[in-house]
View 1: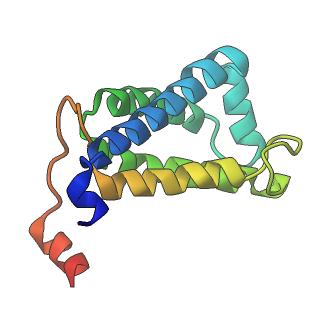
View 2: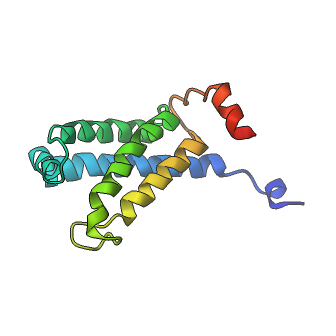
View 3: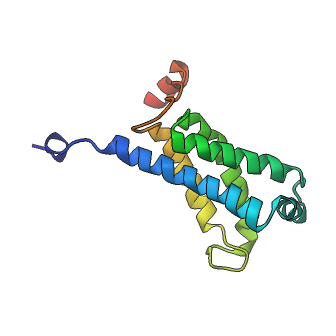
Length: 148
C-alpha cells in the first residue's frame, strides 16, 4: 500500500490554509500597514518616491483589502490569486534595491518574492476546502495546453 491509500487526502485543507494565510497577509498589509501605520497619503508618497504614480497606492490598497477578504472567504480564489501576482511582483521590484533580506533597512525582496510564488501555487491548487464561491474553471483550451 502507498501512503495515499492509507491516509486521507489533506490537500484540500492544506490549500485552504494557504488561501487563508495569503488573505490574512493581504488584509494586514493593506488595512494595518498602509491605512493605519504608513497611512494612505504616506503610501502614495512612497509610491511617488520610487517613480510610481501616487494615486496607484489607493488602487493597490483597495485591491489588497478586497482581494484579501475574497481569499479568506474562498471567493474565486484562483482568479483573485492570479490578479494579486502583479501586485506582489511589483512589491518585489519596489524592495529589490534594499537587498535580499527582509531584515535589511526598508525591507528586502525575499518576503514579497516568496509571497509571489505562494500566489502562483494558489493559482495552481485552486480553492481548497470550505470555499464560499468556487473559482470559475480554466477554459479547456488553456488547460489542454498544460496537460501536454
